[in-house]
Image (cartoon, rainbow, N blue to C red; front, side):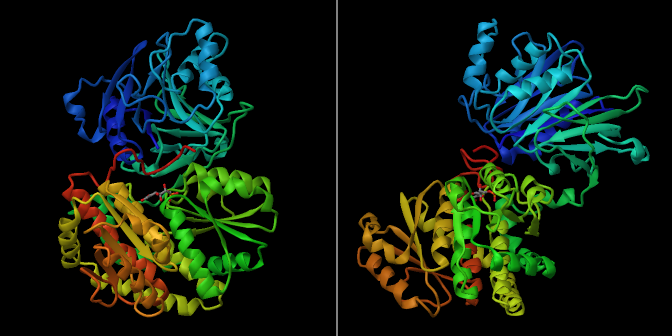
Length: 611
Ligand code: F6R
């Protein structure tokens, strides 16, 4: 959450480059934005409340400068106001900072700085950072001042700092992602490149796609590291040097060329990324199945040998793990423990070097999961990452990776990554059962059925249903077995983009309380299986129908109880994958009909890098 972008290089349009980069990071936070352009001995600051995508840099009076930083915000401390937007300046105006994360001890730091006469103008935790750096500058050079300031900060963070009178960019990371892009990287200097890189320009961003149009040569800043970018003594290019944030020692860094195609992250002919990504599921399931079988079998062995496996994820990824619990039980007759990333720390007592942690994450940057990794490492627990973003923090910290292969997912609401994760965990369950080939067959059949049914006519049918329910106050979703976590996932999808109150339940649980919420025409979405458990779920549906509920049946077979039938193919253990797709479409259409932006839902952000 929060997007950071910075540029130092040979172009004099740094401000415009930063705005363009921030637009690609908008999914990380979109309540306000700002940039700082470095002018001789001062900064030009532009801040605005609202979305960076609505900002036209050609209409703003951007400066001619080769050094600028910017930020698109997802508010944590302090309301959504221009004053609270980043960049933040030190009270003496010498330091500008953009920051992602939380300064947990900001209160104590703020009070200490106030005693020294520092005046604060915002309500943010961030404002202490430029002031800490400014205080350290009294005795240190700029990079050392940043390092010493960073050591005083408690919490997960990344930030980039500028000084009013230096052509230097300094960035520090401890928890939240920062990636350094090097344009026209000079590999000739390879031999002497310990802790050093040379390029015609440097980018620093929270995520790679932000600068992919300019370079695919990147270096990942790791936790407790900083990078200092300056002009080379010859003056014709720039140096990037990497240091340990604690000791100040230079650290060796590799520059890697990554393969993401910049164009893939564009909307194409679709009105929204969410719709495009839903339709991409025609291909992404098949891509997810394209796993290195050796790795798959290795993970299956790890699960079999482990004295307890914990599958963790947050939000949608957590629901995928919960579905996996049922899939492992039915396919592999194996129990796995499932817990949300934010709850994993409660399980510390059960962790031994024989425990296995399997983390599912689209972004690979979710703070709650990274915190779980910290505990796992401490307890010598082996880790497996089921991750979509290659090179992300979780991918780099995992002992083994099963790549999700869904491609860039831009819409905040996860769709194609969800079903790809489900496909991988289903395949893994089959591998644990020693039935990999059968698993591949079942899932390949599901992939081909999805390719078939996911078409504009199907989407139009979901839109018709959305028209009928677009003004309801609440709706409910039920399912049994692996469809129960899918009911929870369906509810998340409906909540986050339509803003309609939606809740998921295990089908049999309704009568134990939630049935009291059903009124005339309250929509109930029911995942009704074709065979096993069909009768049980239909009984629960009948109980709602008898109380006036409007029944939307998601099922391979129609039933007289359904007011609306959403047909899905009958695909055995891949049923949760095909069941969730129409609800993604329903949520999308509800959002559009209710005039919400489905790509950027209010209050949310794509990559949740705070605890
Ligand atoms: C909901 C959604 C979120 C994420 C959650 C975890 O549509 O996208 O609930 O699933 O924030 O994110 P990742 O998968 O990046 O760890």
